Image 1: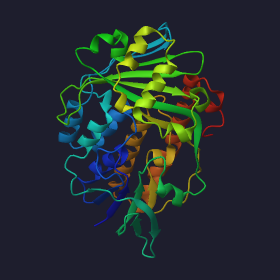
Image 2: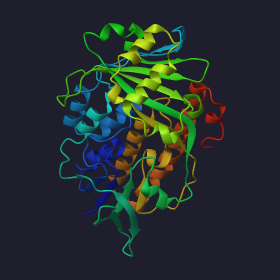
Image 3: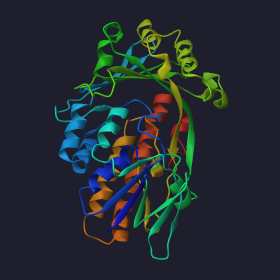
Length: 383
């Protein structure tokens, strides 16, 4: 039986595993996190029409139904404002009831794990691989031990060990922006603080000094039963220079210190925005570096390939990173089950995945340049 090894149990890797576990292929997912609870990558994920189509293609009906039930209530607005809440732009769209427009990352990942207790192995980090004389691939784990398969899929994110070995020349660049994530619980006391339009989707607020902030609600259609409750995602973005904090210090700061940083940065903003940060849960704040993958040329297809951020890392601007990973999973699963040889299936996948992924990176970089107001973000990029 053909055996597929997937390095990384994030959204793309799990969607691929869900698609393949219903076939005659043998699948194993290896994830470095010791459990599905430990991951600071953000809170709310936007799902677009392409992402919805990919989920419908990859997930069995019961898992898709669960994802829909525990997704956020659909929004219909993306808007931009000055720091004094003067509206600069607004885009209204009308999703259908059976679409997902937003999900909580943790809840969504829990749903994608449904039925895969024997497939997903936590606490096992793929450190390196070797293509054997037989054409099979052996992976070695940082914690010790190994496994063999016929295909290795690197879905291990921006710091992908699989990418470093397969494409040592491929680079991921820091675009010079830091993002501080946090959440404000939505309760009877805080609900009235949310401006009406902020409750309709994604709202971007920025001043002229280099600070930007994003807000987006997650109001669960059905309580997920994992302890999660409704919240408003908050983000603050700026360059390290504007924050006035070195990376060495920033990434060692306690969540409460990061929360205080957002309070100080927005002290001159509209009172309604200040209230959102003031009532955020200080313990939920963490920083990330925003990065983008540099474009790479096609390589000789073989028994190792890449998926999602492991190959085309993109800024969160545009909200398309997860959707692109889901499309990768859909495309790769389709090729692997088409009946072609393994190498032909990988080649067909990469012919679609590479140009599509880096086109989305370029688009995300252009939007990042507009939002962050940093010319270096949108020039040089993945081109």
